[in-house]
Each structure stands twice: as C-alpha cells, then as structure tokens.
Amino acid sequence: MNQKLISIFLNKYQTNHLANFYILSSQKDDSQNDLNNWIQKYLESVLINHQESTDFVNHEDILILAPESKFYNADDIELVHKFTNHNARLLNRKFLIFKDAASLNINQYNKLLKIFEEPPVELSIFLLNPHNAAILNTIESRAIKLKIQSSAIGQKNIFEAIDFEHDTFQNFAQYVTKQNITVKELLRNLLDLYSEKCTHFKTLVKAQDQIKNIEQDIVYNNSSQHQLLKIYHLLNQLK
View: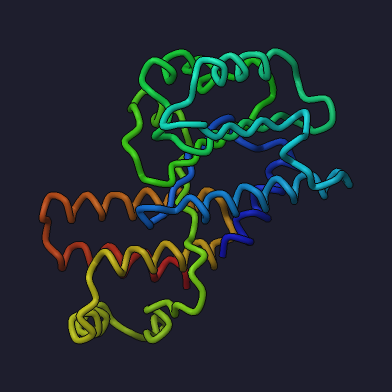
C-alpha cells in the first residue's frame, strides 16, 4: 500500500538516507490526484515527526511548484535557485516538489540540471509525472523512479485467487489464459502487490525495474510465455 511506502520514506528522512532526486508516476495515464495525495501525506508525516503544523504549503523548507499555464515560467526557475541557496532551517533537509514533469521544457531542464544532479544544499526533489510524459534521459538517469499505487477503492488484486505457495508455473499460465488476463493487467496488479507487501525499499525499486523490463518485452513483441515466466518469478519472490 502507499501508506507503507510513506512509512519507508519517513524512516529514510529520519535516518538521513533520502536520495536527492525522485520521479513519481503511476500506472494510470492521468494520476495527478494519486500523486498529489501521496506527496501531501508524505510531507504531512514529515511535519508531524517534527511536531509541527501540517501546513506544508507555507513551510519555509518546502517549495511546491505548480505551473500556472501549460509550462513553468522564468520566475519559477529563479525561485528554485533562490530556494536552494540556503540549507533547511526547521527540517533536516529541504523538499522541492514539481507537480508536473510535462510542464518543464528542455531549456528549463537544462537550467535545473546541476540542482537535479548535485543539489547545493541538503535537498530532496520530487518530480511528479502524472501523465507519464517523456523526460530527458540526462534528467531521468539521475533519479530514482517510483510508481505510486492508484487510489482506486474496491478493486481486488487478481493474484489473490492464486495459491503461489503450491501452484506451478503451468497452473499459473493456465489460470491467466482461462481468465483472459492480459500481461498489462498482471503487471499493474503485480506493482500494487509489491507496493503493499514489500518492506525493503531497494527490493521495491528492483522489482519496479524488472516490471519496466517486462513492459519493454510487450513493446518488442517478445514471447508472452517468457513474459509470464518473469512475472511468476517476481511473484514467488514475495513468498
């Protein structure tokens, strides 16, 4: 669950193990609410940890940037540079939130590259990508990428019907075929399952990378049986 991921990130904040740069996205094409809710709950948990008011919007160590039109403007970029001139005063580090990666143009990305790569102060950047927009490789390669679980309620995970303690790969493949479940559906539910059950951040990130590789298999029309086998192995790692 997303709450578990928030707890993991709060622990990283408390132990000073947060990374400098994260990119947050979701399986949904339009996940602005999901990402906004997650970052809001996380920032609130940080402030509660300091026994402060949960008004993160007006906090001096937190800067949240939402574009007023289609793109961010020059004043926004200037504000980022001013914000990163000084270390945090009330928190252990500063937090910089961009609410829409698609609203940063190439020129702005280049102006922010040094801050993304090596912030001049103790800083964690969260770049939200609610529309799964393409991000420059020079930027994306510097970030830890996270998929946030959809907040949809009442949807049952399709893996709940499978007994992975005893089922073989053959039984798993037959079940998927019989239920007419697509690989994309399996991957979406697999990501939700890892978000819910995984307690180690590095394991979660590794699983997300493996899921991304399977998504590439779909793009290149690789064998569906091979894709299912990879999913089966990922599921068994959660035993």
